[in-house]
Image (cartoon, rainbow, N blue to C red; front, top):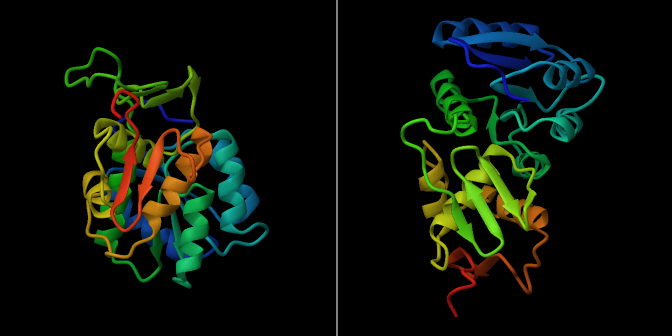
Amino acid sequence: MHPEPSNASRLLIVDDDREFAALLRDYLGPMGYDVQTAHDGPQGVARATGESWHAVILDVMLPGMDGFEVLKRIRKDSDVPVLMLTSRGDEMDRIVGLEVGADDYLPKTFSMRELLARLRAVTRRSVIRPAGESGEEPEVVVGSLRVNPNTRVALVDNHPLALTPVEFEFLLCLAKAKGRVKSREQLLDEIRDREWEVFDRSVDVHIAALRKKLGDDAKEPRFIRTLRSVGYLLIDPERP
């Protein structure tokens, strides 16, 4: 569920630490965000799915329902960009969050400037441009796959794919480079607005999610092929 255009971006913060949530609200409010809060899992689900938001900041540790379960329920109804937070900073937490459908992940040791940069990146990727607006990009067609950068809709065999904003960006990047290999670093550089660790596993997690939604088989791929230690490519059926 996406909000109607407005001057302020509607942002929901789901965190049981009320003081921390208020701190984020006080910082992000002057930056152009209309910030609302929820303080437990069930309330977070209800507000995230029942109202329109430009983005959701979601804590992992919540009363009533943890952040992973909240995110699963959000993803049943909405592709709103979700930035997850954790006080533990475990890599496994981050991987689980990305697998469930988070667009990005931050430990609570983040700086406010980093949070703002990440938030702007995920919301920028979720913006839908109206048809006919200047700067419109042509649809990318690869075999039975069609990816429209303007409506941000991807179809396989004329069936729409339920992709998160980050998954869509990865698919679009691979589709534009059809038949050519993209390394993990190249993929990250093209869709992110910040530096990533060289061994960041988020690319592999998102590619695995894409494969699942495409109905692809990693061993006998129809769409995405892995080149071990090199990267990924989208198979071009017109090239041998």
